[in-house]
Image 1: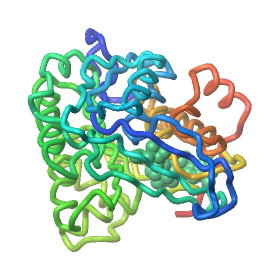
Image 2: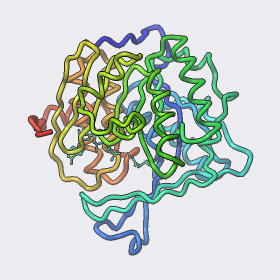
Image 3: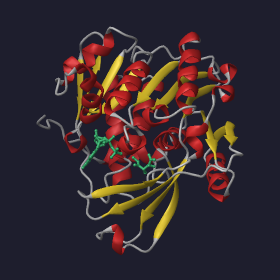
Length: 336
Ligand SMILES: Nc1ncnc2c1ncn2[C@@H]1O[C@H](COP(=O)(O)OP(=O)(O)OP(=O)(O)O)[C@@H](O)[C@H]1O
Ligand SMILES: O=C(O)C[C@@H](O)[C@H](O)C(=O)CO
């Protein structure tokens, strides 16, 4: 069991808010982008990937976001529908904004990078008028991600969604999802991340992402326990700090800590690890598993996704995840 108060009477398990984009993943791996000529198109964007992962695992999922009025936007909507994600709160821009694109370069399992095209991206044009209080109160949980805070009006839309979530006791997950290119300054970034995190029940990020938030207080390099403790005096009940191939650690408000290792795999590319981890971790918690078991689900899903070409389309179903957990050993005891 975990202590998160999911209201069983709500029709949605998880509503995610933020960007719906396109990933164009290099088909020719093992070479730089300059020499790559073909890419495969997938739905992308961290909150979209998390929602898709959660839906594949069986959570009743919805999305709040804004699409460009173009072929890419329509492709994304079709994919959400195919994956049983409620798109009734996904609006369409009519100002000529475009779909954000992420071209990925897969030079080696250790050297992956993303080239983003995000000028005038439709997802950042979501407005407060497009946030329905009634929709948010129908969900057990809300997932926000940091990139939607980078610009107005999307920033205010997310803060309004947070207000409604707190008012209606919707459990809020915050995946920090820090993408430097969307932000203007370090101080601005940290200010908005900290303001949002104060209202969240579960905060999930990498060590580097928490360092970025702590820069504001001239406290970078805090240890994981001190980082978590900062948030327990606010709303947080659970803080998860990810350490890549070394695993992850979670703290609960009673000061208990939970470590998760990794499942070794043949890594194709590293991106998508965080999104798949978050979706299966949230799924585990919502199914009433304890924190350690939910982390194990997260690590297993991440292991599957980093061995595959895409992020969204690679997300496992519940049956796949269970089979993987039955037939693979978690490596624990990572040194961090
Ligand atoms: N090389 C690896 N082998 C196996 N599992 C891994 C590896 N790297 C990451 N993971 C798993 O994925 C989880 C999240 O990874 P990571 O800390 O890299 O997140 P992230 O930086 O948010 O990911 P992303 O690259 O998608 O932004 C880890 O806690 C671990 O369970
Ligand atoms: O988050 C993005 O905008 C890009 C993602 O879809 C990408 O696949 C990735 O980086 C996942 O972590």
